[in-house]
Image 1 (cartoon, one colour):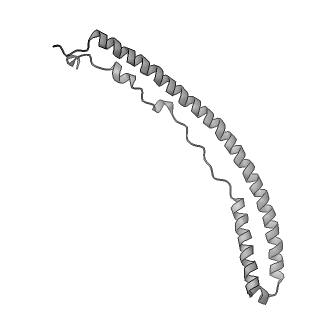
Image 2 (image 1 turned 90 degrees about the horizontal axis):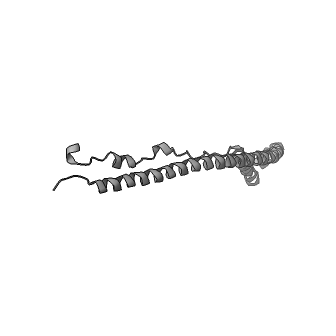
Image 3 (image 1 turned 60 degrees about the horizontal axis):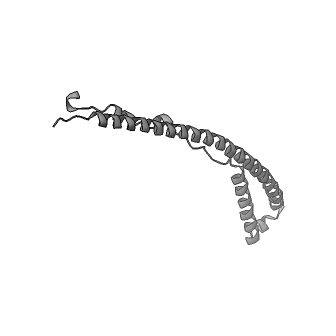
Length: 138
């Protein structure tokens, strides 16, 4: 018995090579289309985040005005009252307002996902097309 791939087997292997190449090219194109959609959608997300940050900045300014007004009133209050339980509660509330202003002023952190590189996709057609037809061919 000869250890060799027959001509019919070789033809079938070539058929698989062609099928693999077609499907590989389909996957390659799908990845490229996905990347294009991701970029398009990432731009929409970035625009929405910019709008969100603009409203957050506006809200922060509003809360900052409230904070400033109440802090001025607090600072004018009697020192004894400021040190009382009620004064301390107001101080804690003012600190919380200031903290919320800072939170609102922070920019929304978001990064678009990385695109896939279709060239990273292994093309297994080469595995079959480079196949040795017999041990003697090694």
